[in-house]
Length: 158
Image 1 (cartoon, one colour):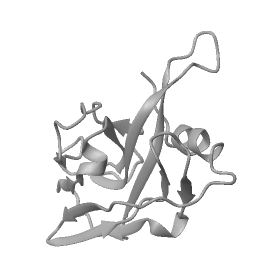
Image 2 (image 1 turned 180 degrees about the vertical axis):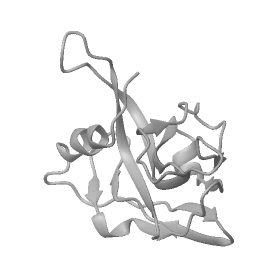
Image 3 (image 1 turned 30 degrees about the horizontal axis):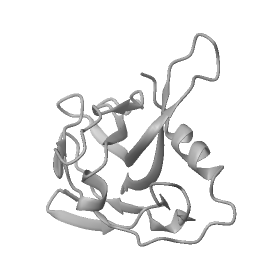
Image 4 (image 1 turned 135 degrees about the horizontal axis):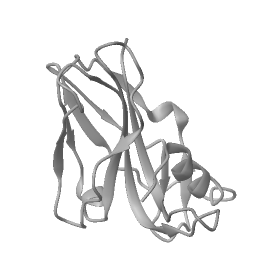
């Protein structure tokens, strides 16, 4: 299945008009001896009856080249299907392709260690997405895309 960061924002963004802000759980990230807990940049209740968008909620964290990123999720996130979409930079300074983890089944994964694809690659952006469904492809030859109702965004500090 194909997955793109903008798909999550676009699919959920269409549902934001006229919605309130539900309670927002934090996801924690740890790398290089530092940690940060962040609120979602987008958060909707499971039925999309209440939604809120907060672009300021994302955070930065120093992620050294070749180092993993540890992710801890609260029950409100891990009790639903979720995945991490990430970008990375190679040791040569080239931007690697957008990648993703597998989709984790509800209640099975409360923490995850995300390894950069290559030994000296550096993670540059990680987005945790709570999955609530699939969206039909836009084109006849396209693939199904995930619909997310909550997103937490972490960027690597320069």
